[in-house]
Image: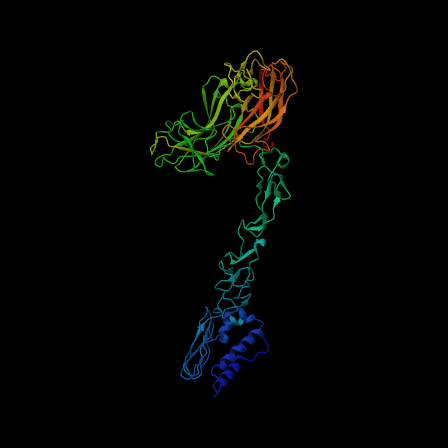
Length: 631
């Protein structure tokens, strides 16, 4: 500090002048305050970093002389306790912990100075210069004998060992707030371990998005808690492509969708779709669900749910094996099933043990039950996830009448009349105690996927003894009849026969799952009319909210004109359900393929009428096309 007189000389001169007759009371101390301000400016503001300097100079606005017999007040925070001339004891000003300012002596006993300014100068105390240290010397802002110059370092009480500054303190200003984008110090001080507190993990440091592959996006970058800003985890575009660093959000065809995906109802559906269209119960109905093996008591409820608004509740259970189930495709093959279930009645003792199973009903009508998941305890009020991979083609326990011939010969399967995944109790459980012997079950968030690309049709060739047409129906009956023919066939010995058609658009119908999916289909077809006819394939579906009985149809493809008795495949490699032009966000309540003749008109033999011949179908194949990529 330069251009400044010794402090003692300045104080003497100021106090002497203030004692002269006629001199304004307090003017000496006002002059002192002005001088101190100039001194601080002369030191370029450096003194203002330390409260001790304020105590030494006796700064404050309360050091005015109050007149004879009055009490001189010391300075405000950090004041030196100046005493008014002719007055009584001066009172020191308040301040933070630090050296005590001494009071004046004129006019009475010495007043006690206020606390304030710098610490006592012991080891580890903050300092500006070595003159501030009673112990050691001022090294990098601390009274120490060791050079503790590292970030957030000071010395211990011996002065010779460097230790971290206490957590949340930053006496030397090592840890300024560098901003979220830096992921560096966050301005909250040291961390107690010799480093600065950094912006925590997952703090967004950059909002720039970027594509990660073709079907996912990185929404931002986040701090890793160690000072680096890294891209966050990719988020799926849910079947849409990622382009120009953002997910596409609408489609009119599959060009906006990932490989293996398709466009349905203006929304891309990714590979490996969930075939359980109402698996999450968000239709607000029990469509697709049923009490297994039979009975009542199944309803939708908004009281509890795993996700969303609804779940299905199964009440009136009278046996361990009764539970809520969902019908899945009947084709023999591999199904991956995930289901969440809960019970909230049995609260004491051992809770029930839940089990996810598959039930098949095949040609002879017997029930086959196949355990897919590991049994798991179901504590009251806790949602439990049951998962299973059930391969009915590989399971040697599957009923033999599900196959036309022994499956080891590798031929098309015979007949699966019904397939349903359901949750029940392990039959070996002991009797339960609680509010009900068999507690109510709740189920939610069912997912059914297919990973082996097998034929989803459980009755594809009509070879099972007994003439079963399970899985097949007509869209409108009228006088039409559906049965199995043993005289007409493409392969094997039988085919499906639709006769006595009185309407040109009376069709052979095969029901599909209501989950959004893309299919490849092949039906071998034949007609026994007098003249040639072409066949048409239709996609038929309905959406939640459609009027009761309303069906939306879309023509997919048709054959050439076929002479009577000629078998030909009616095929399409990609049929989306729902179609791309379906109402936005259509939740399908029904889906099916229709096969009918292509020429339209009034059935009959009269003028202007058309022939409506008997139709035959055989060797049906329906497979998913949007399968997950294979390694």
